[in-house]
Length: 319
Image 1 (cartoon, one colour):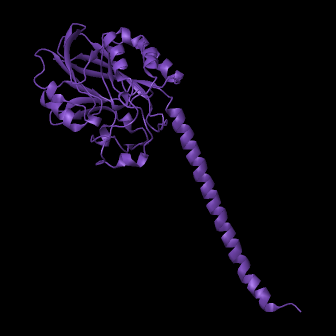
Image 2 (tube, rainbow, N blue to C red; image 1 turned 90 degrees about the horizontal axis):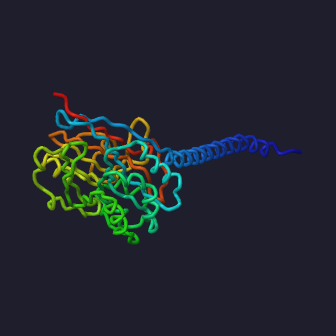
Image 3 (cartoon, rainbow, N blue to C red; image 1 turned 180 degrees about the vertical axis):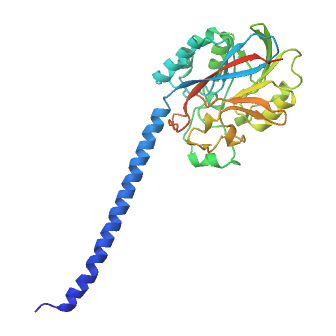
């Protein structure tokens, strides 16, 4: 004879098993969805990091009656010898026919990258230009925990194998580019007197604004250049009444949230100023931060932040 109590137990257990199996299926499906989403996001991020673009920006900042000047702002190339696609895209920028090129640092990302940088910038180096260096022009990139970028009070330590910095500087200066690492220079572009002033990389405390501090030359356009847009350096440029400052370093946040923007800037600049044109301080000093062309070899993704160079057309102020 069948045991009725056994049937009762089975009747109670079977629904529980079905619920458990159903829950396991839900969890499995959820894990699969997360995995697929993660893989899709990674794939998209890898693709976007190769989706190079040129942005155009028009700024009426020159003295009245001045001829326009086309300035190509490039930053954070982070070139390695194997990056053929990036090298060819940087080569293509010469077709924009800028009057002047400004490089705001982090050209290198490999100990053998200097020849690759020269190859990429070959035709650009035939044009007048100026540059500053970034930390990745001094030290080879190393793996870093991405979460540390959210810690704003972290200690910045210069580390990594030494890179051939002097070789890079020699290539740029031999081409006639102005070295603005804690230096300044006055030149003329399209009949406009330009006073360039720059600092070495503030991110690793190589900046020495005191070496160039003071009033810009009279009747000259005051042009500031730095790699990492730390507020202490920007404040010094503002105090001396710079007309425009260019910087890089932030990668525009690199991993951004659509319709929100950057989560971090890797410096003390607010996230809303991570890329593009903004204004700094009480004087509303124009500041352009490039989102840059490259990434660290250890984090070759971008999301909602395409790699870029910017063609800035400086024109005369209206009367």
